[in-house]
Length: 79
Image (tube, rainbow, N blue to C red; front, side, top):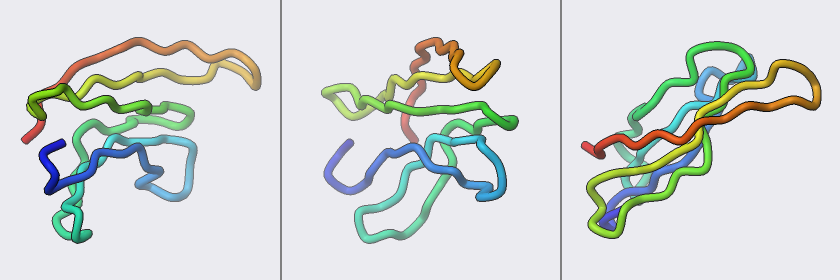
């Protein structure tokens, strides 16, 4: 967002289908969870940082079957 960090979606737990929104320094240091995908099949994805680098919009949704997905759009402040 500011040239010093990267925002991305990541399967932080590694053992299920929950994806979280993460931020990390461009050097790979200080990874942090911005928004947690709380449960299996919960995805937090498609981050888009505001032009001023202060907020990020993202989709959050889940699957209720193999082909059905529902998502909503949210905005949060970056640390």
